[in-house]
Structures are given as structure tokens and as C-alpha cells.
Length: 380
Image (cartoon, rainbow, N blue to C red):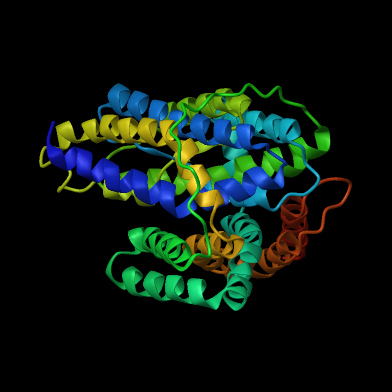
């Protein structure tokens, strides 16, 4: 195999892992995951991405790489009052719904009928509170956070894909170099998958499971398919949804949230520099899978290192990582004039963090936006 296949896969995997692992850890903390459950979560989601990428690339002979749901992790991190077993039940539901979208056409049409502006506004409402915490982190620890921001901005001018990774490297270097973080005893134990029996609480399924499904479909899978089309490949949508949904439902039993088609990291693996022969480029999916297996196996040491960092560093890293998705969500939310006010209502409610009847704000933001959109449509 060409060395370019391995180099592209390595860069794509490191960008995906380093730029959003802090958000996954925040999600695990929000649902009360123990350290063992968090380690199982990271191991399972890494292996799920590896398995799905290898299966889909080999099956379809086109480069197909998966990512974990970054907006989904933000949605989970914004929840309150949800236990880990209840979260696992919501993860299972989201995976099943993704798989059913491939098999049940009315469900796919219902998702497609959701106005893009309202779906994007719900995502923006979920992401906005995390981005706002970045300024507070900079105020609390300016000596560490401001250099991270400067590096992020400068590297983004050159290569936006690695800007968050560069900010993470800067934060880690400064934190341990200045003594703000103490080096932990880094051991390399084999991670252990931990079976977590799901609890299917109706309010959590409705308030977390359904929004997780919607943001994964609207902000991850659809852009992922678009990225493949832009590179000249016809994405096998039905197979992709069936595989990612099925793997997500199974890996959820070990704590993992949903996996989906990658967009930014996929673009790294689809270019002509990966392999000049388009018919051989699918092998990058196998190399990508191998890197994710290694990241999963070494996750205990990585998580121990990240846990030693000051909380402001992790908060700032999450804020920087979500600026790009927030920009995209806001652009899509207010692009169409006919859904602009409904999107504003969705954004306001979703960002409020207010829960009612045990159901999170993301769901109520979606409901509010659809009600406003429906009333405006009826008036017209």
C-alpha cells in the first residue's frame, strides 16, 4: 500500500480525535459516567468508527470514513439529570432510528421534510453555550488560554482542519511546562469494554434520543454524503445508514454515542494526493480503521493526560472546536427568509437550556420552531 494512504489516514484520525475528544469527555461527565464507563465509551466509539470505515470501504470499493457525532456529543454534554443507563438507552434509540431511515422510506421522507433552517437553528442553540464558555475560560486562565487562541487563529489561516489540534498541543505544552498541570503516572493498560444495560426512560428518549438522531442526520450524515459527491463518488446512502445505525446501536451498549459519515476528515481522505488511482483510493478506509484501533487501545493513557489539564484548557478547547460547526449552523439557520423567524425561535429556546417535564431544551426548541413555522405557513 502507498505511504500516502497511511499518512492521510493518520492526519484525518488525529484531527478528528484531538479536536473533539474534550467534548466527548464533557458529554460523559454530563451523564455521570464513571472513569471506567468513560474509558469504555471512548474505546467503543473508536472501534465502531474503525469497523464501520473498514466494512463500508471494502464493501463499496470507495473511500468511506466515519466520525463520531460532534454535535451529538455537544447535545449530550448540555443535558442535565440524565443517568448513564438512560443515556445509553437514548444512544440505542438514535442508532436504531438511523438504521430505520435506510429501511423505512416514510421515516426518511419525514426527516427530509424538516426545514433545514429549523434543524440548523436547533444545532446552533446546542453549540452556542459551549462557545460562550471560551471567553470565561480565557478570563480565568489568560496565560494559557490566550496563546491557544492565537495559535488557533494563525494556524486556521493556513489549514483550518488542524487548527484545533494545534491549539490542543499549545495548551498541553504550556500547562505542563508552567506547572499548571502535573504529569500523571502514564501507564498503558489495556482498555476494558464495559457492558452498560440501557434504561429506556420515555422523557430521555424523547428529549435526548430523538434530537441526537436528528442532529446526527442533518449535520453529520448529509454533509458527509455531500463531501463524497463533491469528490466525484456516488455515496451508497442506504448501506451507509444501515451500517452506521446498526454499529451505533450495538456500540451504545458499551457507552458509545452515535457514529456517522465524516465530512471534514473525509475530505482529507478523498483527494488525488491520497492515491492517483481512484479505484484504489478505497484502501484509505482500511488504514483509517487501523489508526482508530490504535487510538482506542491507547485511550486510557490519553484520557489520563487530558484529565490532568486545568478545566479552563478543556473548556477553551471545546469552544474553539465548535466555532466552525456553530458558524455553519448559523449560516444555514438564517439562509432562507421563510424560516428565519422560526429559526430564531428555535435557537432561543434550544440555547436557553431550560428543560420541561424532564425533556431537554433541544427538543422544545424544535417544537417551538415547527409551531411558529406552521403558523406562518397557515397564515400565508
